[in-house]
Amino acid sequence: MIETPASVPAGASGPAPPREEPPRAPSQELPQEPSQTPARLPVPDGVGRFLVLAAVFVCAACGLVYELELVALGSYLAGDSVTHTSVVLSVMVFAMGLGSLLAKRLRTRAAAGFGIVEALLALVGGGSAMALYAYFAWVGGSMAVLIGFSLVLGVLIGAEMPLLMTLIQRIREQDAGGAVADLFAADYVGALVGGLAFPFLLLPLMGQLPGALAVGAVNAVAGGALVLWLFRGDLSPRSRRALLLVNGLVVALLITGVAVVDSFEKAARRAVYGGEVRTVRNTAVQEVVLTEGVRHSGGSEPTGFAMFLDGRLRVCGGDERRYHEALVRPAMAAGPHGRVLVLGGGDGLALREVLRHPEVESATVVELDPGVVELARTDPELGRLNHRSLDDPRVRVETGDAFDWLRSWPDSGRPPYDVIVSDLPDPGISDSSRLYSQEFYGLAARALSERGRLAVHAGPAGERPRAYWTVETTLRTVGLRTAPYVVDGRLSGFTAGPDRSQRREGAAGDRPGDWGFVLAAHGAPPPLALAPAGARASGAAPAGAAPRALHPADLRRASARAERGRLAGLLPSTLIHPRYRD
Image (tube, rainbow, N blue to C red; front, side, top):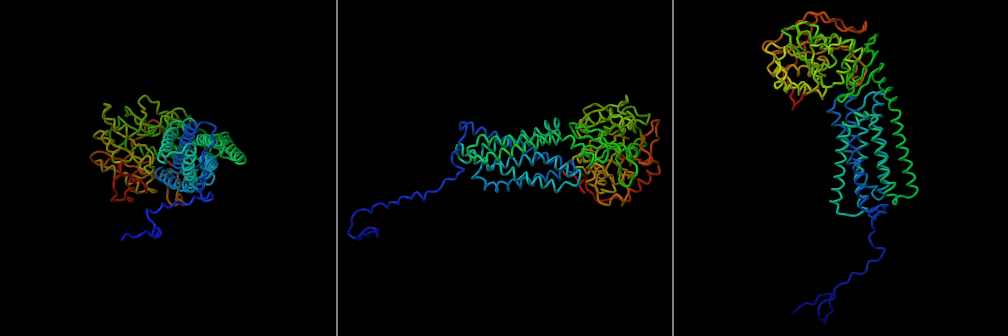
C-alpha cells in the first residue's frame, strides 16, 4: 500500500503541487550599504580608478618617508639605531592593524573619513620630526615621544587601506581579490619610491626637518584633491567646506613650518649643543656640527672647539691632545713606523701625532666621509688643531669604508704597514660594531707587517667595561697579542649635544672619564712606551680646559688600571653576532 503524503488530501491523485514562496514585502528587502552605491564621478570610471591608485601610490610613499624619518631622527638623538628601528617599526606595524580595525566604522562615509585621515596624517607626519627635535632640545629624552608618534602615525596609515578599498569598489565593483591586488601593487610601488627618495633626494637636498614638512604638504594635497574633487558627490556642502578648511589649514601650517625651519634649527641646535654653533654641514654620510664655547659639567672654563658627527661628540678641543697622544704614541714607540695607516681620523688629529715622528715615510688615511676631510682642511680652528697635517706631502687620503678598504688591500699591491691606527667611533654605537668585529681585525692583522702594531680606540672602559674587554678578546681571537691600557683625562660629564641623553645620572661625579685603548701585535705582546715627541708641538687648547700631556708614568698607571678591571670569559664579537651592547 502506497502512503499518501500528509500534504495531499485523501483520495487525491497525482503529485503534490509545488510550494510557492510568498512574495517578499518591499519593507523586507535587505538594504544596500551606502558605501557600495555607485559613485558619481566627474570623470569616466577607468580614469577614476587610475586616480585612486595614484593616490594610493602617493600616500604610501609619504607614509614610508614618515617611518624612515622617525627611525633616522630617533637614532640620531639617542644613538642606538637597532633599538630605535625596532621600536618604531614594531609599534607602527601594530598600530597599522589597530587603525585598520578602527577604519571599519568609517566605511559608510569613506570619502569624508579618508579626507580626515589624510589631513591628520599630513599634519602629524609632516610635523613629527620638528616636534621630536623640539622636545629633545628643550625638554630632553625622546623615547616616549618617539613611541607616541609611531603609534599615531601607524593608526592613521593603517586606516587608509580599508577606506581606499571601499572607494575603489564604489567606482566599479570587482572581486575582492582583484581590488586588493591593485591597491597593494600601488602601495608597494609607492613605498619603494618613498624609501629611495628619503636618503637620495630629500635628505641631501632639503634635510630632515624641511623634507618631512614638504612631504606632509604633498600628502595633504593628494588626499584633499582625491576627496574634494573626485568624490565630491559623496560630500554634503557642509562637509566639503569643512574638509577644504581643514586641508587648507594643514597645508598652511606645513608651509609656515618650512618658512621658519631655519630659525627653529638654529635655536634648537643652540639649546642642544649649549654653545655657539658656527658650522653645520650635511654631508652624504652624516651631519657635521662645529661649535665654540661649550662648557663641560663641573668646569668653569669653556672647552673651546668641539666637533659632533650625527650628534655624537668626536673632537673636544679641551682633551683631544691627550686622547690622540694616548692612541698614537705607544704604537709608534714599539717598533718601526715608516709606513702608517690611519683608519678613520679624517679630522687629521691622529695624523698630526703620527707626523710628529720624522721616521714616517708615508701615511695613508682612510675616511668614509669626504666632508670631514674637507672641513679639516678648510676650517680655521680645526686646521689649527691638526697643524694642516692632511696637506703634508707624505700623506695620502682615500675615501671609503675601512672594512671594504682592508678587504681589498691584497689586490692593491701595497706593502704591509708598520703601524695601523684605528681611530673609529665607539664600539657601543650599533652602526660601528662591524668595525670592531673578528672579521675586521682579521683583515687588519693581514695588512700588518711582521713587526707591525695595531692601535685601537675601544671606548670608555670605566663606563662600558664589557664592551672594552670584548674588543680586547676579539683582537686575541685573530692571533694578535694585546697590551690593554686605560687613560684618564676625558672631560667627564660632557653635557652638550645629543650625547647628553646617554649620560648616566650621577656618573660624572662618581669616577673620572677615561678612554680605553688596546695595542696589538703579532708574536709577543707589544711593550707600552711613549715615542719621543718630534718637532711639532701638540695642538693647544684653552687654558684650564685641557688635561696635561701624556707622560710615561701615566702609561704605566694606564696599564695597571686596565688589568685591575679585566673581565674574563667573554666571547668575541663577529659580524653575525655583535656583542657590544651592555
